[in-house]
Length: 399
Image (cartoon, rainbow, N blue to C red; front, top):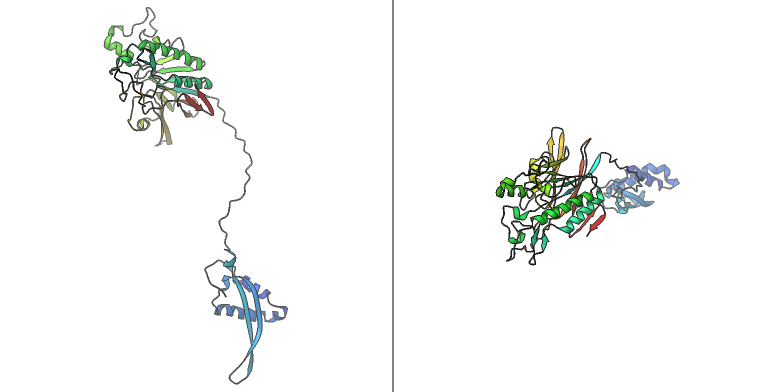
């Protein structure tokens, strides 16, 4: 017996050979006639030869019958036991595992780093203070974050360190109202910033160090212009090439520590190569991505500060020479993020001291590896700092 189903079974020739092979030697002379009878039998029973998978058994015998006149006649009889081809599974290839492959070990040779340099980017420290109820100075910068940033800088031994600006807060010199707790803290701020200049030089003894002016550094010259215009630009006698005595670079002894100060916020900047520029920045997008504001206007990659948030975004444009991808990124800040820094979202107690109220800010720094020849390539690496702890390339730094 047989049931039928669409298939891609073996051909009829194979089945016929199998049927032929099952015949005895004595039956070979009648092989063709017998196969024809078997084929007819299959056809009468609605069995397609293509559906036959295996012939299990064939019985051949002779029977007889009497006609109406009583005369006997012999008849060749055949019985066939078949297995359909689908009884043992499909004949076509089913889904299988891929081949077992042994890949020989490959020796990857790193690119030579000749002509490549490391730059450390240190953002928005907001060095400054307020006074506690006992009169003690409480920092609004984060000493632990600064210590970790300096430790990583020393470990890298970079060719360049860029301080992106707002490294001084100078709260009492700003145009916004501040409480008495922030008054008479300017000298302490200058002293701490001077110590930091010595510390960053010690951490990067061979580096070029550049301090970009941010909007907070501009508070000092603006305050002088508004309140003591005659003192603006005064220098020590007969030293015309020196910084003015009431300027940030002079007060923080930057020349002594071989730190280059670039005034002129927001125009001051540092080009690492022809494809990437570092600025302090003057764009802020509330509750959104400031990075995309820069990408919408810049033709090159830009690293910026000012917003105290860690951001990075990329954009690809079609250019004359093909696609051009640029990036915009903010390393975060090195200031306290718990409400100590004066801001529009800061809360005060009844005595004008900051309340614990965390801003949507993140602490961090960045490393840029760049080349100044050839394709002017670069890589950007963000290093977040959490509670005085940071990880850089598998090493942990903590205070």
